[in-house]
Image (cartoon, rainbow, N blue to C red):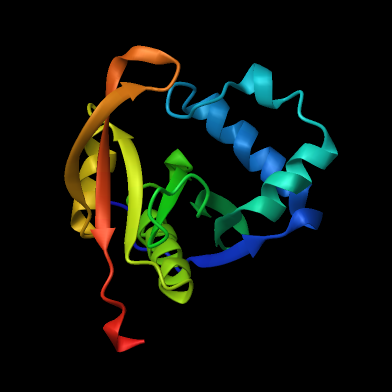
Length: 170
């Protein structure tokens, strides 16, 4: 198992759009079936769309020794309950898997959720992605019982998971 790394997690802002574009394209090249869009689709996005995505969402990037190691998105969009938010688009570069990067990214989303006063962080994971499911379970997420087809493909099944937050210590 690789040694744990010192991980720095920072939020990207609209002016970081080129960095976000590079990360997103790397994600889609490395794990083409794991995200709800394709490399061929995303590579056509213009600067304004990249900036808008960074303005509308909280995109967090992890770095180890100034090398981009992964990213994740915190979002309040689409939540049916105002106390909910979501963890979306989690990706760790294969060179940094099992080094603490995913742990740092999840904790950054949870911190963002607590700051926003949220009660539950929701995510969706493909059922046969056992490594990701195990990570989320170690972080305290539990399956809600809601399952459904993967967007755009009715074969893989996505499992909804939730981390209930205790905001009483705020």
